[in-house]
Image (spheres, rainbow, N blue to C red):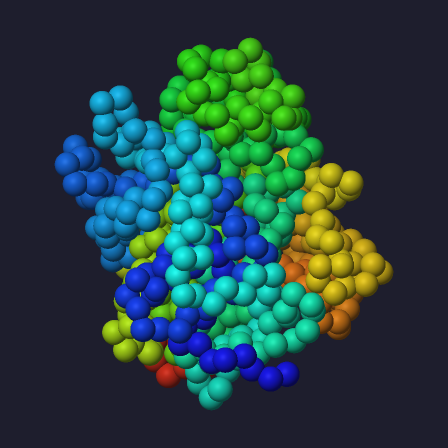
Length: 564
């Protein structure tokens, strides 16, 4: 296994965070840059994002202080305030850079950018493109810019593990498109490979979202935190299609309402996502149903204002103008990930992280709607600036500073919930409708492909049924036994399908350990047996022990409670 030509910076992933970093490196010049992605460059979770970019621009009546306050409120006491301040203050410049690359956002008659209000926001500040096709437009602009740059693009490559030399990351071991092992060496590696929505059978995430970056970090002993906080989008279309078609929060921002089986409204639709998902979970248990209804019949010009959703609904056989839409929560976003400082440096020198794979401290216990694309743009750029400035080791700032104390968020908020029965919230099936990856493309035999697919479905079923919107000690133990069973059956082969299942089990184990230890309800962690928010858990739960000498270098047992 001989290494390829050594790069200065290797970016893993082709979503908004990774491509923003690659474009910035190309613009500032002088570095040998590579982008490694497990699919085509255009294939990423970013392109599925219907929501927009929450940002305060010059001249707005809005303020960054208000955006910061909304983000802290949604994060339920676990945001790092310094990281949120970075997000809201630097967001405007990143948006203008994206527009300069050719991204086109919706405008109002007479000029000016159109704004929408989404759940958890106190005012309309969310930029959209094509109504609800913001992710696709952002991805289009960034992909075009990267293809025009001098970056080495490694498509259909799958990163298996980090390469460590001493106490430093020096690249990755990867499967090339033909299934052969290759070593890709780099002075710096930027993890930007997204979340782990495929832990769940019912998800809005594409099949590629298998937690690869977080799993690689865990195996290398790099600290990971906040992985118990899985945000479930409350209004995924209840349908056999997978990923579940997402019905954007923008509809509720424009007046669509949620109704129970009797046709009654039962929740404030503009609450943060965790609270809306929790209210739906309660209603599903009360009614013994697998969905509630989203009434968008009151919205005017639906097809013109929301063309992407209109097309998706028409393909699924629904008419939002004349009928209510069946919806239920689906796994959507992982608020935690690889711990980083305010510049995206992990505890391992040479390794950086940005986007959904990272725990920047911005989201806390629950992400505010439309902060994710902005976070990827802001912290992807900060990684680049720190690398080019000569930084090599992490600093004790942001979420990474939490390894040495409590979180840096000053606003402690509580959101207690009444006890809720635990059980399956949404239909869980892994049958013919479940998306698969062709074994021919990744070098797996049909037999190993079928076995790994069955293991993946077993994992997804257990996590959906027992570690979903609502959990308790008994359900988490049941999920843990099921995941352990999948781990015991994993084949020792080196192919992408098996590696993805292995990565999903790594992240699932960390999630279940943290969810079990966090004996409270906070944000998107809902414990039926601990329905109140506890001051004792206003801390991050960390996994992994850093190999570096610097912030977080002390070895800690998995899932140790951090702070005084």
